[in-house]
Length: 141
Image 1 (cartoon, rainbow, N blue to C red):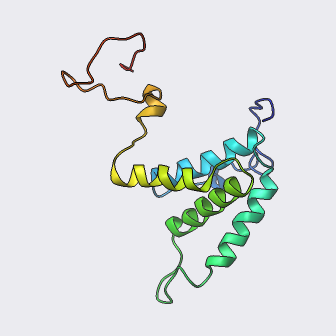
Image 2 (tube, rainbow, N blue to C red):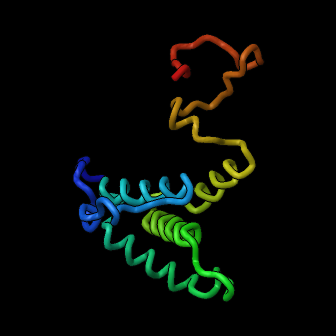
């Protein structure tokens, strides 16, 4: 990965005010932010992601949206997320099986975003439960 650069990804610097992206749901903002951050960190070139997104939109055109309605923000960001996933798997940043398993864990409630808030850990800290114990890392944030 390249050194961290706080400047916006090419093409995104001009997106301010009314042109700034808007989102209908928090997951859409997260998908957007992840794609931008990974590009800024050098995981891939922004143009490469844009090409993948265009391909994903073309692939899904007509199939995902019934004739009686127009595509929504959610439809667009589903395609955005699919393009990002395909790019990260094809570039070897993520393994397909690991991605599928992680998505399953979130879907069934075995995992949540607390690892990014509290720090990753491999055990429960239930109050008074069998896993409640003292140790040298803090999860009180």
